[in-house]
Amino acid sequence: MDVNTSQRFIERGSHKGKGLAVFTSGGDSQGMNAAVRSVVRMGIYLGCKVYFIREGYQGMVDGGDNIEEANWSSVSSIIHKGGTIIGSARCMDFIKREGRLKAAYNLVTRGITNLVVIGGDGSLTGANLFRQEWSSLLDELLENNKITKDQREKYKHLHIAGMVGSIDNDFCGTDMTIGTDSALHRIIEAIDAIASTAYSHQRTFIMEVMGRHCGNYSEIEAEDFSKSKKKTLQGFDEIDVEFDPITFNRLVMQQDIVKEIPESILETETASALSVLIYLALVTALSCDADYVFVPESPPSIDWKDKFCATACCSYLALVAALACEADQVFIPEDPVPNNWVEKLCKRLQQERKSGQRLNIIIMAEGAIDREGKPITSELVKNVVVDNLKQDTRITVLGHVQRGGSPSAFDRILGCRMGAEAVMALMEATPDTEPCVVSLDGNQAVRLPLMECVRRTKAVAQAMADKQWDLAVQLRGRSFARNLETYKMLTRLKPPKGAFDETGRGVFANAAEESYRAGKLDKLAVRLYFYRGVQLRFCTRY
Ligand SMILES: Nc1ncnc2c1ncn2[C@@H]1O[C@H](COP(=O)(O)OP(=O)(O)O)[C@@H](O)[C@H]1O
Ligand SMILES: O=P(O)(O)OC[C@H]1O[C@](O)(COP(=O)(O)O)[C@@H](O)[C@@H]1O
Image 1 (cartoon, helix red, strand yellow):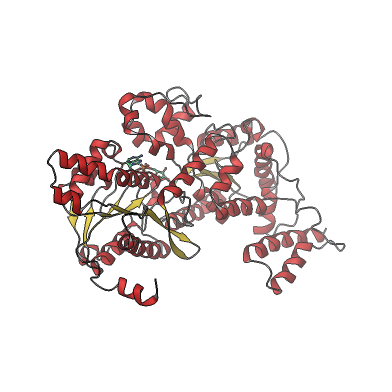
Image 2: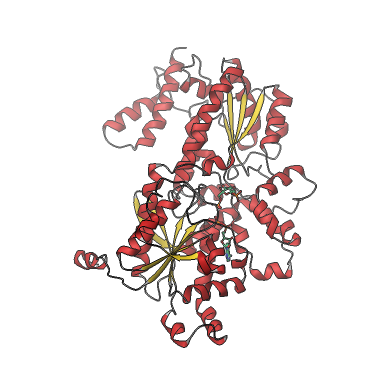
């Protein structure tokens, strides 16, 4: 499209008469209001008739006052508010065709054929299914004399654009989901606050942050519910809802699903909800100098508990002490091997205390598991620390605080940009255009095929279910992998072989300086080298 065409296209009123609706679905997140506002105003600007659909898919199915025309001022003064002013819900009715038929009727009778869905992968999957079925739903409505032939013809194409609203940053295809940045702010503020009291009492704190995924849940078809079909998910067969207290805790976290899924499915399918997404835990650990982070994509070995307090080797504590506290001594540790993580953590905790550190922070994603896929709960880690290290230990579950409060500037802007792009995508759509999800790629808003992203997102869950941890990390994307690598890098005690020059000075420090001056390195690499260099310089004093 040349400049003139594109300018004409976004001309005020250039899409007069089109019916467009926006709704929020699944878990709410900060920044959703900014996105809603942007959709409404962009739509109105282009001449569309814009509707709110309240309470997610439930409002679409129920119709009535839940579908309400919006105007310019209905989205005034909402950009700074957390949550979503139009409500969000998880809706079992929409999982069934019967529910989707009602939803189609409610849209057609209002002339709505453009939908902006703001939610997670489940909501986007539902929207895609809805679009696939649209034609047959309209046929059924016509057959039942619910709509006229004219309506059937006029509204025969449904267009879908998605935006990912979730604090979990768990959607493949976008660098940041709407809400993640704000949630991180909450977590970091909370950890900073905890650190002061932890310091006073010389305590270890286990901070549990949100981050879970139930991608396979979205794949449950309506038929599965009616037939109570028994399914087995590889790797989770041993999970017992009733008798295993650890597993029970996990399922409690999924209580919205537990409530609604028949017992027979609950016992098998819900297990898949244990596939956990860890962005918040990982990045928080990185930002807060946490002593350890439990993450499902890269879980510890199965015997983590036994090894937790068994030996005397520690790397992270020493590194953090050296970097953050200007420690006088730096240890040259062994490269961490996955099966030794418990040992290392134990050593770290002990070593930090020995070297004068007054507190420890352990961060856990709420769905952390070990390499066998078994959950590791905050309670379990606490017991291990208390029983074996005798450290005064507390658990803080940050819970929904993370999803509350005002959105950060980043999330407000992100919502605005994504919303405008979603409307543009709908206006440009042709009958053959696939549903898209508006994503952030670097600093660019891009449109990606919705189902491809959903497929990739679900592949992460599958990789974890298959215990393919490297693959799970890789599927989460480059930036996730880099964050994990950075975290591991900065928690190493021992620099790689060849890190010293003949004078004992870190060669990485030299290399970084030279390369940075020559413009050969990116910021991250320089920072990593810098940290290694600092560490090595400390060594040279001995
Ligand atoms: N496979 C599906 N078919 C139809 N609707 C679905 C499907 N998966 C999810 N949904 C709808 O989307 C809602 C939100 O999905 P959920 O997975 O709970 O949250 P999120 O969108 O945050 O991932 C569900 O309550 C349901 O109404
Ligand atoms: O608010 P609920 O229903 O207790 O759900 C809690 C879950 O929602 C989330 O905040 C977001 O999950 P979704 O984006 O998948 O909806 C998770 O991090 C958390 O585990």
